[in-house]
Each structure stands twice: as structure tokens, then as C-alpha cells.
Length: 369
Image (cartoon, rainbow, N blue to C red; front, side, top):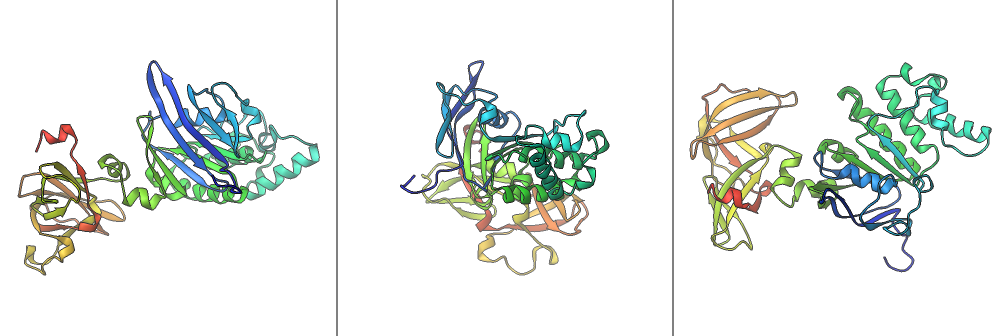
């Protein structure tokens, strides 16, 4: 950090947590600025929630440091207690007090006079559109309303940092998108630094200014959602966001030859086994006369022949699975709107070169080549 630059609201440095000899959080570092939403994204069991608990102070790290606004709040020798960290918490079960009214839940933990508390409670309930439920109890509210009460309660003390652990997972799909958007708007207004834990890529893409992709206790990639999605670090990163197709080939002269033509593999030594990974939406189908239509453009490479195995309509798009002639493998393609060809129909397929990723094959994959 240069002189005069504002320190990040939250900075964690090289956090490690060990259980039974295994590093469940392994050298994790993050910085989040005020008003920024960062999503810690990864599969269940990768260490996301453990990282959150260490930041909150309810669990101690084995090594590493946590800083807030440039000040150390926790290392292995020094520890600010959780209640003094000015950190708000939201969990998937909302954790509302059933014996307190909505107003009582939001006011819980607030300091100041009764009048000051009342003003803050009414302000927040108005912002989450729950003023009419101020005297209601949690069991009288819907799941979405309970979530908004939990958000108001977490924000009431004006925390500098908001930690959210799968806060929308208990909501049905009809409510989830609207509540996510409302929550994001309110968090931005409060100017808190937000760390949201989720295992849902769509949620991370929708809410985050930055995504930290976590796997096996480590952050494997970090950046803006667009960059993480379009510039994945490896095959697993591509597959975490969507279905994938994979071609296998060997590099010769910085090119990998496949039935779809050659793919560039710059910097990869000759003889290296590689995997060419691409998403179903980047497969193009020839709808015109079974492959006798216009030739593919150079960016699409060579057309390969496949037979429809099955097709399903998914709402906004259709998923078509092909059995490819060249090796009998299955390949998936998605098509906007309704397209459900009969099984056995022959079509020609091409792949967008600018939407493919070439990675060195893992040892287990090399044995198949």
C-alpha cells in the first residue's frame, strides 16, 4: 500500500486452519474494500465457512493475520473478541429470536437510548419494506420476510464488515433473485465490506464485484466475475460454472490436432497431452441440409459429424446430446429456445475457437489418450 492510500476495510493474510492434521484452510489471503462485495465460491467442504468463522472471531486460525481498516485484530498472539470487531453476521437459518418481535430482533445488540434504537429500527424496516410487520413475530413471517429481518438486524449496528454464509439457500427460487437484488442494494448503501460464502456460481456472478474461487482449502483464482468465467485457470474452474465438453489431443508445433481441426497451444512443448475444454453454448449446429450448407467460418474450424442421442427443452434453451462419429463420445450443445430434434438425426457441429480453453492433461487423463 502506497503512502496516503486508504487501507482495505478487510484484509486477511495467509490464514491457515488445521483439523486432524489436514489443512482445511490453506494459506488464504483476501482484501475487500468498503462497499465491495466479494464472493468466496466453492464446493461444500472446501473451507469457505471455516474462513468466515475465523474472520468473525468464533474460531481461531493456526497461523495468519486478520486486519480491519489497516489495524491488526487477530493473529496467533493477539485477538480482538468477536463482539468488538464491528462485524455483522448472516447465516442460512436466519437465527431469529422466536420470543422477540421483529422490532426486538432488529434492536437486539443496538446501543444508545430507546429513542435512538427506535429510529434505527424503523429506518431499517422501512428500507426492507417490513414496516407493517414491526410488531409481528418470526413465526408469522414468510421465509423471505424472515431473511430481510435477519439482514436488518445484522446491519443495525452499522458494521464495517458483513459476513454472509449461504444466506439465500433456504429460499425458494421464486423469491431468491428479488431478495438477492434488494439485499445487494441495501449492502451497497451501507458501504460495508461484504464477504459472501456460496456454492452457487449463479449467485456469485449476480452479486459479486469480485469472486474468489476456492478448492481444497485454497483460493485457486480471484478476480471480477467476467474474468473468472472467461479466463479460467484450469479445467475444474471451467466445470464449476457450467457443463463442459472435452477433447483430448497431443501438441505438435504449438498446435493440437482434433476432428474439429487444429487448436492453438502456444508455449506448450511438443508431445504434451492436452485437454481442449469448451461449454455447450459454444457448439454451433448446421441446420441446413445435414452439413451441406454454408462452410464454417475460419473461427469455427472444421465441422464434425454427430448423431442426436437425446434432446431436452430446459425453458430458455434446449440441450442436445450427440454421439460423435469420430470416436463414439458424447458431446453436449445448447440452443436458444425450443429445438428438440429426433434421436438418430445426423448433424454437423463446429466449435467457436475463441471460446475454447487448452490445458495440459492431468496424469489420470493422460492414460486415456
